[in-house]
Length: 244
Image 1 (cartoon, helix red, strand yellow):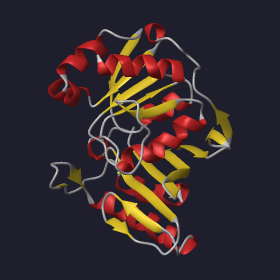
Image 2 (cartoon, helix red, strand yellow):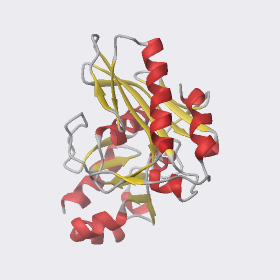
Image 3 (cartoon, rainbow, N blue to C red):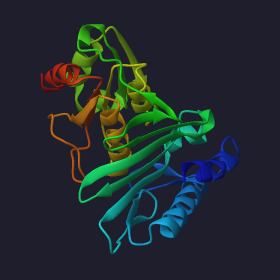
């Protein structure tokens, strides 16, 4: 499905697009809607009994136990500014537990995937987290840094004094880098289920741990703040920093 929808997103990338603003002040384009329509048509064809929860068209109830969670363009602000690190997120949940997910970076031709109990992959190559257990030597990515600075300035100050290296970042690409072992931790905020649920299984199947800022498991009704790390030990230290 990710491969089939990639030409749709790329046909709009770095082209002129009219931009609308949604109620939450986030941008949306016809590219977002076209990709979600493509994904929904593929899901309907292959899994007609499943429900679908997408960013652009909301939730469609199904008659079965499966629920697909999709974000057609994760990082619309990146997309409309020509930045190649936007993503496409697809996940399938059964009875409240993620079973399979894809984190696709269409402009880089990279597709990361995970299935519960089967590990994580970049293409067909197995991937795993770095295995780092200490925050002092970690590469830490801070997603939505300005929002954290405005909303939780004390947390922001502690994060900026943590780790070996720190980078401001956005969207889903940092979670792919974490799963592949390139970075060690990600802190994020202001998320919806279609932002965090597909990436959560990728991180977990690669050997990492991901929760909300309180250390609670992620689900459809989770806190909008997320913390992910390469190992449970590093995650525990990161949660300690977030809690102060």
